[in-house]
Image 1 (cartoon, rainbow, N blue to C red):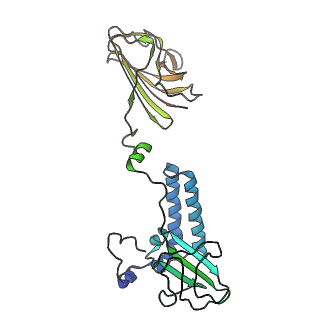
Image 2 (cartoon, rainbow, N blue to C red):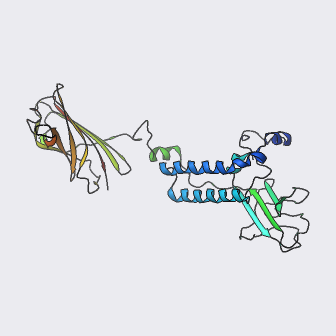
Image 3 (spheres, rainbow, N blue to C red):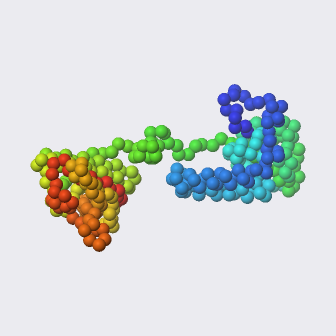
Length: 319
């Protein structure tokens, strides 16, 4: 089967196909082509684009095919143009040991598979010898092969064919957009705005902007509090986390970054920590022999006034 003729109404003339056919001498590349398919599967599995149970089935099928190619059990048929055209096609193989006298084939084989084929895309082998369609046999129904010269006991007959198959799970573009974020636009959906509860600080006429995005079990969050003339800062300020997103237990460690801007003249850094359902804010202090985190207060790291700002970002896991 050629992979390049899909837009044409019919296949090429026999002479053209014979000229372009190379599978008879590049079949030696089949093992490498199959191994590259295994490598591709590994990438798709690692990225999560193929479910693990399906990946295992594909891997087993590829390894079985590698073994069959190595042993000679699996080979190209007349309608194959090159190695990729063989690998990309779904084959059905029916094999049966004859008892003698048969002139037709039907029913189940030695492996309990029922004979089926696509007329015109089948190959019949007797003891490994390819038979000629139309003169050695007739195959028109898709389930029986007739016109054979009477077979003898212990003859092994094999029928191979390209067969129709049904596509399994499929996804629309909309579904994919909902499942996967792109690197250029992370996350794939808009950030959600929420109103956090402020503890040990007073909003007054200041402003607070809080947004989060949830991707799977991971939440990305950012908050900025800009003080107004009636806003105040107390000791140990905290912001509440977005509602309805229960925090996975065991996350009592630095979960993000903190930055403070002193009316545009100086900047300070710190960290935040999840404590129950709140974000606890800490400033990085250099007053001791080693840097350490300390409480923010009304005068630490500076005396808070209008237009000063406190910004935090966080990443954490939800239950």
